[in-house]
Length: 460
Image 1 (spheres, rainbow, N blue to C red):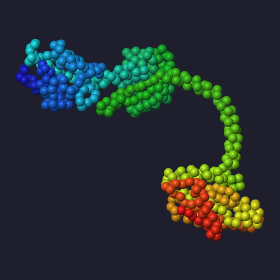
Image 2: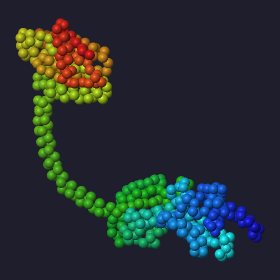
Image 3: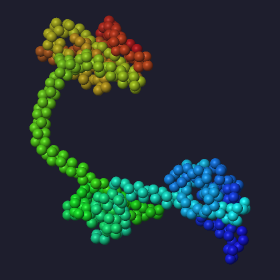
Image 4: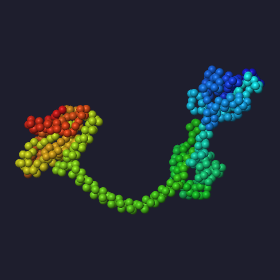
């Protein structure tokens, strides 16, 4: 390009902040300046030689609708032979799904009806402006009230100053934008506005913090209304708080219904108190009855420890727990040696005392996650969680020795007894069946009796 009044026109294009692309009359690209290359994310070699039909890009209109080829800027100038001024279009390339928004100008250069004519297209990137435009449209038309105030001065009586309100604000308050711009939100407050809430808002704004409050305000005619407000600090690109944005919602109807509910609640309090008293009395009666029924249903009436029914239920739960944890479980049966002789010699009352003493011992001996019961007569049953097989031998030895050391006072004489026990050790990987394992424990108990009593036998 030639110098013009001492200017290098090519250098001017190369440094221009505006994108410039030059097309031949057949739409083939012969030149693109650096700004254009940057906007299209292409190199000079990649773009030169391409025409408008290239699938590398497509165009959409201001509403996001895809443009037909005839409406592309170059083809539009070529078809109408008229310039394009400040048209907004979006460019979609193969590397990006969202359009880049451009303000486009285009015109024809050269003699009319000459094939040597060119079409010059220039454009500015207005994506940021376009996005702001969309957000502005949303804020302006939302049903929530939006107020924006300056953050540099929040002190009474001049600050903070209102710089923006939306249509919903005008509808609710009756004020026009022109009437409130430059004023402070205090024009909406009155004698009944909560002073403590106002103090909390002031403290949050002073510290550049977000705050949420429910506040009583007044419209232009003095009509009170309740708003729920969320105030957030707005920052510039340097991270500095420059404004506060308040998003508010009219909750007057909700407050009215809440007050009505509170009034009704006060009326119901007396009735509620009476009902609560009746319920407490009835609940106590039912609880006592429930405890008696549970005792009958789940506890042995003589020893006050779990009965067979409760034991079976506990054991099934324990089996499931051991299956999940992959732990062994031991099933046990224990019988008091020569118990008939004790009853015959010292009487059934002495036998009952021995059974109760054993029950007290079991309650201390077994852990909370283990199950035990009076299985019937002088027989007791157990299910134990076993981590190591050797642990069971230690437990059974302690159990038998502990029973032998018990003393029961009968008519001034200390009686002691011994017991025989049988245990079946199972691992969940082999499958566990309650009835089958208890029968095996009974076989082990029989072996203990046969081998001299006062001992425990373990089957694995």
